[in-house]
Length: 270
Image (cartoon, rainbow, N blue to C red):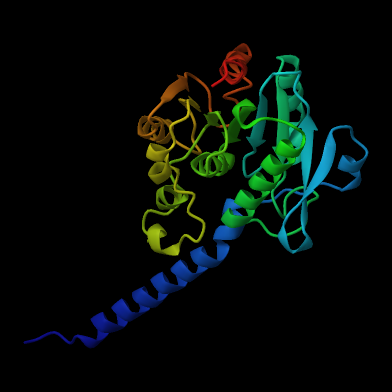
């Protein structure tokens, strides 16, 4: 006797609808997950030395923090992580300044006190605007060192692909945002759902400049294997993994040994 198929079909239909709803929810929520976008009161920036603004398209502006380099020294152009904001980059900038480097960090649209909404295209535009500002200050292309941390590594890689920077430092990088999404929700089709992809792995082979990758071996946010894999795709890269370091302390721990490594790499010149 053949079993009735209607209950099975009903179950499959309900399962399919639930899965579709979950995909729709993930698609809608990805912006908030990728870009938590912490905010800063505008007055906390405007009265501080080194802070300014650069223009974007459509009348928007984003904030910058700039410490000029000593004559002839490189300038590190830094792109921060997704849970950070511009004001939290002051310590990094001052530390690199003490090491004899210039420093420029740019805020992302919708982050800190900058208006707009963050997106992959918007972060790239902010990066290019910051580099244009640096050119206007007389900084030569061969004196620019691109730097990114976590989310910001994808911005640094794209700008290097566009021909900016003589060297690049990537701290806790990911291979692509699709790979990160697949890791977070392996049962959903991240390759279909992700709008902002930051595919550093695909871009790496076309970037010839010297690259330093620094990654904590205990990183539970972006696994160290991603840093190793990405580093292997650049034609000229060195990968340093840090025992005992996680995602947020890879530069700050170990008596700041990795911070010193970053500064030394940036000072070496092209």
